Image (cartoon, rainbow, N blue to C red; front, side):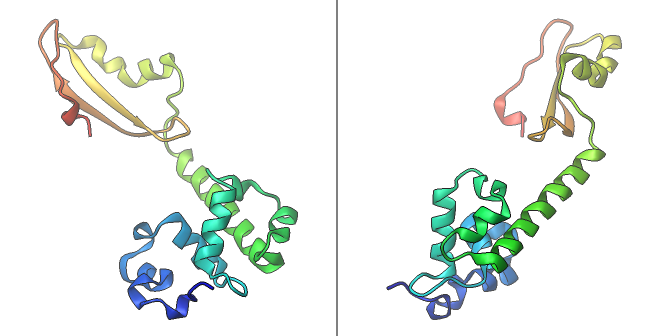
Length: 158
């Protein structure tokens, strides 16, 4: 039989760590356990979260329809609705964030971003930092070289 979350030391409890250190300090399992709130007889919310993420890796859990979610052991309609709503809210917010960011998904669009280099007389090494949807998060000139070369060390690209 597993330990209930209430039996854990306070520094090990997901909600308390969330309050103390913020959401970025929690693992995926801990964040999911917070959303689930409780487990079921013999299985804590943390164990349930670990099991669900093991069975549905790489975000597959968030793609399950409500009907499938609610049939998972320990989930049911109420938790399935909470999970489905949280996943949809995350998707919507991600799309909103992308709206203001330039799309850089083709060589032509890279050229649009870096066209200012046409007039330059030296070599430039420019880093374009993109998110998973090829939206530009940050652009940085890493190195300005000579007429024919630009020296760059990997440590400079961060």
